[in-house]
Image 1 (cartoon, rainbow, N blue to C red):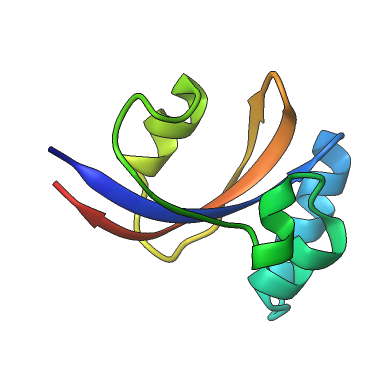
Image 2 (cartoon, rainbow, N blue to C red):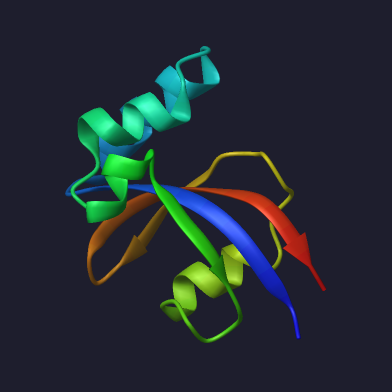
Length: 93
């Protein structure tokens, strides 16, 4: 059974998502950006979603989390909740 750990930042608009992604690319700390900007309760934990398997998150998340390179910021990813930046921190296939 595949398992992954990831963290994310949830915001309302694609523009905001791209702006935050650029800040992270330029060296800002993902966790700090999550705490300051994410509308998800996980923002208080630096965006940490913990460990989960396929099917436990929305399909758009699964697609990225179980295919994207580890420790590389992905997004914007749109879901019914808004726009996310996603970073896979570990994965076991």
